[in-house]
Image (cartoon, rainbow, N blue to C red):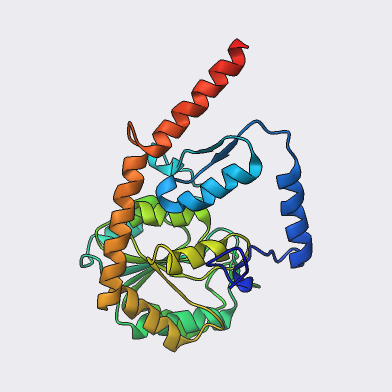
Length: 287
């Protein structure tokens, strides 16, 4: 464990592939030490991280308004990439809570060997899967054309591959039983907001912190750490979809979903926080 930052371990710290840990921590420190802001707005909710928000309020010495999850108030997709809606028709043909949805975000790159290990593990799990493989995410390849022929064989029976998916609609679909994610904050909130447990495969930045909380604090996720191997992939999928452990994770995820929905309704913590923020702006304008 990392002293003073329970439950984080040293390897969970939000490091970046763009620089060493020391430079990243220095940047965070400089941002916090700039006391020119009159308030901080955070896309989160007190039901998820009440102690962290309280600590932040004390440290920053300015009002902290947690008004999330913001996506619950959005009425349209915020995706900048064209979504392939054919996957919804495919999901309609699957059994309830049987599908593992895989999407590793808009920036992560995957080596061919890792893609093949994922394909083998997913195939061996005997669960249907919807897999988003973003164009350009496999180095030296426009899409999947450079992958060995065995890849097509592995995914043809139970898998459905798209370049991008309407994520919110996918996560809310009754056929989806789990979400394999890079654990970016938006994806994390969207998955919890639909009561969907997660397989966590973080790459960089805050994703590692989010993954640790999903697994060890909220207990709605399974972390896949170390080198990808088909056996560990198969076991993770089975834990999430087929085992009693996965069923318990889903129960906890649904409870968190209910709390998040309550937070953005009238009288909820996030709704009240937004109202307080608006009131503070009105007061400043009157002064």
